[in-house]
Image (cartoon, rainbow, N blue to C red; front, side, top):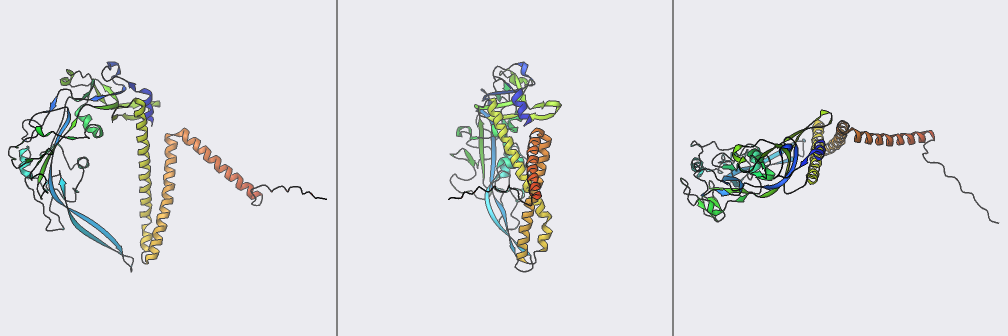
Amino acid sequence: LSRIDFCKNNAVVVDCNTTSNENVGRLVHFTGDVTVGESTIDFGESDSMNLTKPLSKAILLKRTVFIWQKFEIATQTTDKDFVGGGETRTTTYTVKEAWTSLGPQKDCPHIQEATNSRGVWDQILVATGGAEQPAEPQGAAATPPGMPLQAAQMLGLHDPKKPPHAFKCSNTVRVGEFFLPEKILLENPAVFTTGTTPVPADYLPEIVPECEFLLKGSDNVLRTFPEGEDPQNGDCKVVYEYVPSDFPASFVVGQTASVPDEVKELGVKFGVDQAHVTGKCNSDLGEIWMVRKGTYDLNEMIGMAKEEESKLTMIIRVVGWALLCAGWVFLFDPFVTALEVLPLLSKLGYFAVVLTALIVSCACCCTIMIVAYMRYRPVLSGGLLAIALGIWGIIAWRLNYAAENGGDVTESPTASPKSFGN
């Protein structure tokens, strides 16, 4: 929150087309269209699966090769024994077929008839500049079926630049006079690398040298099997996608004067980077960097940042509480194990352990939150502490008053005068 307040008080609103050198080194806010101008992009002439002609109006271009493989899925069930307090665990293995960009997979270890074929993967690999020696197949357990490309990339399982795949960013991406290098594009995937569009059919090759078995489909995909038919194990498909340019984006970043010489002739004068900021009393507030797709003014971006910060804080609190609760359950687990001789006692014991863990974990979370509030929000926590002490003081005073008056905490009612008629 300190960084957000710093941003609100110190960010300078500039025009992306007319900013000046006076703002170099300062935190600036600007909006504009992300464009590449008249430049084009392709994978290079040395790539045999390159486009037939360079693609314009594209921020990035990628080619992903998929192979149809079998995956082993393990499902485990646990049944409690009626006598002795033990349990029986049963593991069932099934086969699922799916597309994967991680290359040929190993055969399913627990199902002998479920084997995987490499198909023409190695031929495509060599044609796109990969190693002639076939790579070791991936382990079925390490590559679950249907894993999103971004998740696989984050885990280091998928490299979009490694053959047979290909990935190319435009080196002329800019917003007005601000240059956006490839590093910025890849570090902000929600803004710059999502929303891909299939490459138009006229840019795809009709025949790929050394890969004449690839068939061009009406959906702009190259396949090793006829379009409309179900794939067989080892079949491959090649998908071409790009991210179109000329969409609006908003920035709160540090303005720099670092710009490559090759883009200066395009009217680019400044670069962007994370802004390292220092708060009051020389406190280090860290880095400030906010980029959002769409047009938002400074106040709207600050509001979005506060909302995201609140959500992240809530998620951390819930996850921390859940981990504390699980830790206390594990700590008391020996008592549950001791009671497993009788199923009824085991269930009651487990219920008691979970209930105790919930209470103790809540107490731990409240204590940690109070300490954190006193460290980072002393004024607010001091006020809340004063109110809490005041409430406890009132309770103690009333209890003491009740004790001194024999347990009567209310005043005795005054009898109303009686009237006697004649």
